[in-house]
Image (cartoon, rainbow, N blue to C red):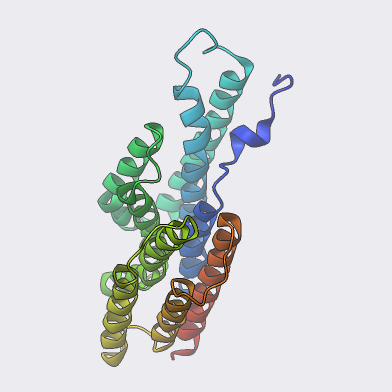
Length: 263
C-alpha cells in the first residue's frame, strides 16, 4: 500500500525536544493525579502531537507531485492519528466529563499559533518555540482536573511545569547561539529561572506547591549559569538537546516526588 515510502519519516517528527515537551506534562499529570479519564486525555494529546507532522507533509503537496505515494501515505497516517485522537477524546469525556477540556480550549490558540509558524517553516522563532510547549502543557491541568483536583491546584501544577518549560526554551536558544560564536547576554535566561524560582518559593511557603519544586528550578538555574558561562564545554546541538531532555526528566521526577510525599 505504501510502496517504498519510509513511513518513519512521515509518522514521527524529527525534533527531539518536542518529545520531552509532550511526555513531561503527561508524566507529571498521570503520576500525581492518575485516572482513566486522564489516561485517555493523554492519548488524545499524543495523537494530536503526532498528527501535526503527516498533516504538514500532506498540506505541503501543492505541485505536480502532490499525489505522490509519500503524500498519500501522509494522509492515511494522519487519518489514523485523528481517529485515535477521537477515541481518546470520547473516552476522556465519557469518564471525566467536559470540565477537563477547558484547559485545551483556553490554550488552543497557542497550539494553533505554533502550527501556523511551523507550516510557514518558521518554527524556530521565539513565539513558535514558546507557544507550542506552553499550550501542550495544558494537558497537565486537564489530567489533574480529570483526576478530581480543584482548579487552583490544577493550574498551579501547570505553573510548576512551566518552571521547567520556559526556562529551558530560553536556555537552549541562548546556548545554541553561544556555540555558534554569537554574543549572548545571560541575564534574560537567568532572570526567567529566578522568576519561576521566586514564584514557586512563594507558592510553597503558602503550602500550595511542594518545596521540592523550588529545588528543581534551582537545579535548572545552576545548569543555565554554568552552561552560559565561559567555563562551559563546547557541545553539539544534539548533545545539548539530549541533555536538556535529561534535565526535564529530573525536574518532573523531583516534582512528582514532592507531590507524592508532600514535600
